[in-house]
Structure formats: structure tokens, C-alpha cells
Amino acid sequence: MSFFDKLKKGLSKTRQNLVGKVEELVTGKKAIDEDIYDELEDILIQADVGAEVSAELVDKLRQTVKERKIKDPAGLKPLLKEIIRDTLEEGTNTLNMGEPPTVILVIGVNGAGKTTTIGKLAYRFVQDGRKVIIAAADTFRAAAIDQLEILSSRVGAEVIKHQERSDPAAVAFDALQAAKARKADILIVDTAGRLHIKSNLMEELKKIARVLSREAQGAPQEVLLVLDATNGQNALTQAKTFGDVMGVTGIVLTKLDSTAKGGIIIGIKGALGTPVKFVGVGEKIDDLQPFNAEEFVDALFA
Image 1 (cartoon, rainbow, N blue to C red):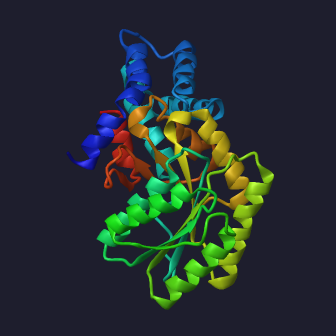
Image 2: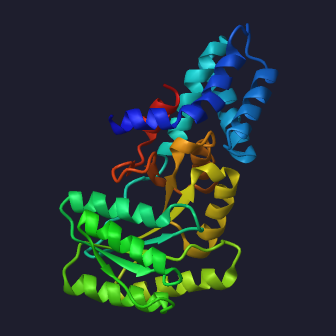
């Protein structure tokens, strides 16, 4: 099965929750009126696009309908698809790869799928012929270090670790020195899952970032926030808080295949402008792929 087919299958719940309801709304309607726009906004909100972004999308839709003189309500669905695609395509969704080693700091709350995401990212890079080192800077859970070692051995990456309860910033420091010495292409830094409302833990993330930036110009080139798509609007709240503290450069959205809340991708991009850089639609090692806005929208509206 191709990734597009996996994406299409994974988005089936979101498609039913969003596109299916749009089709029901316009079917049999004779004219485009304000009631249709109001109901469409409600559908977007219920699909976890968020109130503010839903209102903006409907305003764009209303304006484009006037400009193109669209009369048939059936024309709203392809037009909505176009507007969502344009929203998701704004900016760049590609990784910022600096001079080696490129440093990727991976952050997020507990349970979002951070550690497995790192394994999948490492797999992609190794398959592309890049040398990868992983910093096991989640020193609060011995299981996280063990999991990283298992994943890295499978994909062909190397792990730099300290003892449990060590200073995470010290692990990041040593891993960066190792990445330089061994001429690694990419350093991925794992961090402990933390609630975005815990200020002391957020300060620890800032310390890790400071250490990395002090030791390598431009590092970290990427700060990737891993979000669980099943969390819906809570994921948007996390993205706002982490973004304010850490300057998140990209989102990795996991578990799209397990939710009807895939509209959160549109909500995050529309509200924050933060690009989604990878999406996950399964548990297999190759089920994490770079985000492509056109492919995503085609799969959503399939």
C-alpha cells in the first residue's frame, strides 16, 4: 500500500466528520445563502479546525464565491478544498538542514509518540544515506533510553546516553561533541515528555537549546513538536504554549489514522502559521512521512 493510500485510509474518520458533512449540507440546496455559511462554519469547528480559523476559512470562501460568481451550492466543496490546500501550503514544510551535523530537538507532552517518532525519523535519514546520532536526553525514564537503543539498533543509528536522572543538557552536549567528532550528518535530541503548563520543565528545554546553540552555530536547526492528532484542540493549546517558549519550527502530527480530529492540522497552520513537517498514519517504521499539503487535501477529499 502506498503512503497516499495509507493516508486516505487513515483520514477516513476525519473525512466522514468533515467532507461527508459538507456534502450533506450542499446536497439538494438550490442557492448559497448565509445559513449555508453558518452551518459550514459549525462543521469546520466540529472537525477541530477551531473557531477562529473556521471563521477565517468561511470568510475566504464567501469572498471567493462572490469573485467567481458561483451560484450552485455544489461548487462550495471543491472551493473549500482549494482554500484549505492554499492555507496548508503557505510557508515551507521542508526541514531546515544546516551544515552537518544538523541538530533536531524533539519535544512534546507525554504519550504523544515522541520516542517512536525519533526512531522513524532516524530510519528515514539512514535510508537516505545519512549518518545519524540520537541523544537520549529523556533521562527521567530508563525505559525511554532502552526504547531508543532498541529502535536505533534496528535502523542503524547510534545512541549517546548517560545514567538515569543525569542532566539532560549534559547528554545533549556530549551527543553534539560526538556528532562532530564522528562526522555525523544529523543529531536528533530526545527530551522527556512534559506538560506544557510546567514552567520548570519548560525552562529545562530552554537550557538544552542554549547548550546546543552555544556549541554549534545555528543549532538546533529544527525544534519539532510531536503532537497526538487524537487530542484535537488540546493539541492546538500545546502548540501555542510550546511555540511561545521554544520557537517551534515544525509539527509532527502522529496517530492521524486513529482519529476523526485530523482537522487540527488546518487549525494549527491557520492559527499559528507553524508548518506541519511530518505526519504519521500507523505504527510501522515507514508510516511517518514528510507532510505534503496537496497530497493531504487530495486524501481528505478523496
